[in-house]
Image 1 (cartoon, one colour):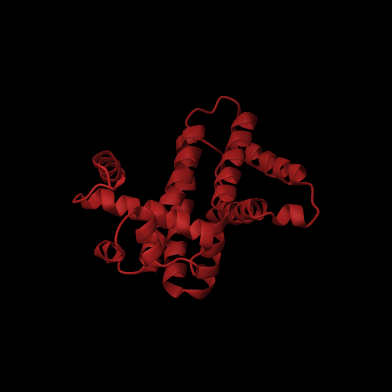
Image 2 (image 1 turned 135 degrees about the vertical axis):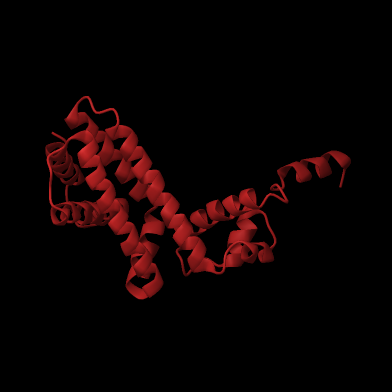
Length: 203
């Protein structure tokens, strides 16, 4: 190997000795792996390899594959809600805001459809994931209540919020995973229906 190629290889290697950066790279790699291959099609070795580390590095940061999956899901959810919050922080036209929020959530559910599919499978089959998922659900409902208060939106019961949240999330997954199209339905009509419902909540 020439000196120049050796320098290039060294430059391309991930940073060493900074645990936070190593952990972050592992999480990012895990997210890509879970999304492409699913939870059961991914292992700790493939995650470490994609991040640029030796296999053993994974276990310096995570107990097992499930633990990193839950971190990935929590980050995904936080990123989605941040974008929603950013839109809601500058509402000038409720209809346009509703349309942008629906579009961005569809984007999240489409780009990460593999991750979402694995999540739903694990919620059904893994008690620890199911417990974690339901805690996140509770946080989402609490966050919706906070948004209602901050934006001075009409009050609804938690039950009404839960119905809307679960219903729209299922539809977003159906869009992201191609289910709406495979049923021969007009996706535009489905999206417009969600926009109308969200628009009504924002006014």
